[in-house]
Image (cartoon, rainbow, N blue to C red; front, side):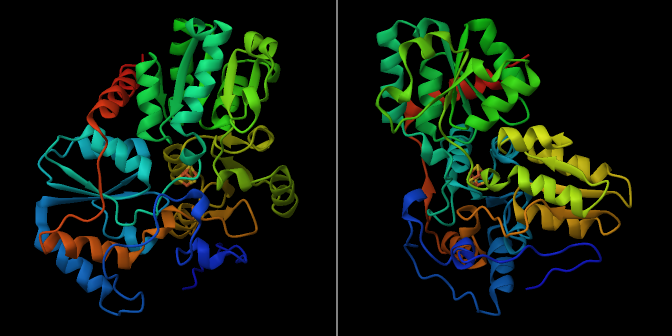
Amino acid sequence: MTFVTSTWIEPASTATALLLLGRGTDPASERGVDCPGDLPAPSDPDLVARATAAKAALGNRVFVLGHHYQRDEVIQFADVTGDSFKLAQQAAARPDAEFILFCGVHFMAESADILTTPDQKVILPDLAAGCSMADMAVLGQVETAWERFEDLGITGEIVPVTYMNSSADIKGFVGRNKGVVCTSSNAKRALDWSFEQGSKVFFLPDQHLGRNTAVLEMGFDLDDCVLYDPHKPGGGLTDEQLRNARMILWRGHCSVHGRFTLDSVREVRERVPGVNVLVHPECRHDVVRAADFVGSTEYIIRALDAAEPGSSWAVGTELNLVRRMALAHPDKQIMFLDRAVCYCSTMNRIDLPHLVWALEELVAGRVPNQISVDPDTAHHARVALDQMLALP
Ligand code: SF4
């Protein structure tokens, strides 16, 4: 399919295009690959009709959530669209829906399961839809780091903070240790609260969101931040570094937003005079510093909606969203910050065949790919989520 408006230029495809479109495998970042049933063929001309019919047959029993980074073919069936936090809230606001069909990634479906009633079932149409960032912080690694901090006698000073983009296990760890969850919209408020509780923050799993918030919004120095690498002995940090640090950042990042570089920003500024560079805070620190505006996915949408006709915008976030915004605003020049394709490969695994399969399974009385968090983890994760909701 080709998307062309008067201003939109499709980024160049890459050698991994098939993988990005969800036809391959990426064992390093997935929780599962194979669909446990018979997927309809992507070429089936009746897919839209089948999804429409199955959704109508389920009526109010199903509530379909669509993350902003999803493909258009999936988004058209979403009852509500949003970022991960908004979607979790929306799921919690629909206790009457028996099934929450989450077109997003694994950690989002876990959060929805934690926030919904025990009777509701949360379904992820493709179990391979994980998040590479969330996969970068595994509970055993985080507990090993905490033991190191305990040996140093500094855990009493540390407040753990985890980004919403983390597994339920990590949110549970944070809840157990009196910390808080944050989103890209409220990271500063979460850090402000945390520094009232202690003198150090252990920030998981996105180093960039932690660093960008601490340095650019709270006035910390880069030297106040250290990077804990779970693949190095002791995290690759000396005792003195850990004792002196204010922000202990986990070495994780988003493989989508991490692709944007300072060169991308320089190149677009040369090519498009007067362009506004708008990026997500999951981008690297030098990219965020060089941008004109930085904010969450919802902020990016609001900024583009409110932009003056005729203005030019180079946007550093996931491609499906940027393309959708460009098509929705043909009177503004909205372009992708990078010249190459940059989808969230795992989220893009949820395609129309998976959606049709999941809906038709529900119609047939079977519950496919249910995501359920064990009660103890869910309890502690909920503590950390509720602490976020209570932030001043
Ligand atoms: S865009 Fe990045 S953080 Fe978001 S789901 Fe994809 S890999 Fe995870």
